[in-house]
Image (tube, rainbow, N blue to C red; front, side, top):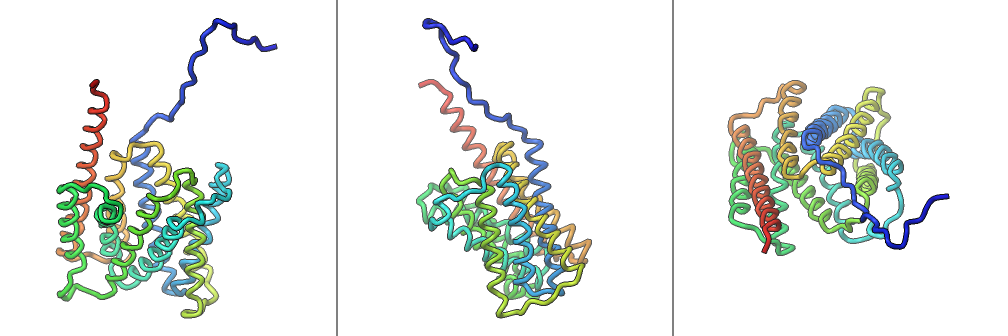
Length: 315
C-alpha cells in the first residue's frame, strides 16, 4: 500500500521538464530538410517531362499526405480540430496549393537555382506584409533588409535584359503564395498540431493538382515516372518533418539562417543534373538576397537577446 504524505509535510512543486536545446542537431535537421525539399522539386521536374503538372503535383501530395498522416497518427495528432474550418487555415491551404503549382511550373521553364533564389525573399516579404496587415512594428533595419533583398530579386529576374523570361513571374507568384501561407500560419490556433496542419495542407494540394485534370488529361505513367513522383512525396514529407523537428529542438535564431542552405543544394543540383550555370547578375542577386536575409536574422537575434537581458534585470 502506498504511503500518503503526512499532514505537515511539504510537497515539492512539480517541475515542467522541457527538452534540452540542441542547436547542432537542429541545424543538421534544417540542412537535411532543405536538401529533401530541393530533391523533391527536382524529382518532379524530371517526371514532368512525361506527365502533366497537375498529375505530378497531385501524386507527390498523395504520398506526402499519407506519410505525414502516419507520423501524425503515431503522435496522436491525427484528429479533428475546429480550427481546420477557420479562415486562416483556408488561406494557408490556398497558399500551399498556389505555391506548389506555380513553383513546379516555374522550374519547368527557368533555371532551377534562379527559381529557388526568388523564394529566399519570402522572410522579407512576410515581414513587410505583417507590418502592413497586422500593424507589427518594423524598424528601419527591416525595411533596409527588404529593400536590399528586392534589389537581389531584380538581379535574378533581370527585367529588360536578354536574361529575363516571363516564366520567372511564376516563381514570383509562388513566392507570394508561400508568404500568404506563412502569414496565415501565424494566425492559426496554436493548439493545432503541426503534423495535422501538414497533413491537411498536403491533402489540399493533392485536390488542387487533381483540379487541373480537365486542362491537361492525365496519362498512364511509366515505372520511372511513378518512382520519381513517389520519391518526391517521400522527400517532401521528410523535409516538412525535418523543419518541424529543427524548430522544436533548436533555437530559432540559431537555426533560421541555415534555411538558406537550400540555395546551395539548388545550385549544385542545377549544375550537376541540368548543367545550369546562373550568369553573373543572377549569382550576385542570389548572394544579395541571402545576405539581406542573414542580416535580418542577426538583427532579430540581437533584439531577442536584449529583451531577455532586460527581463532578467531586477527593477
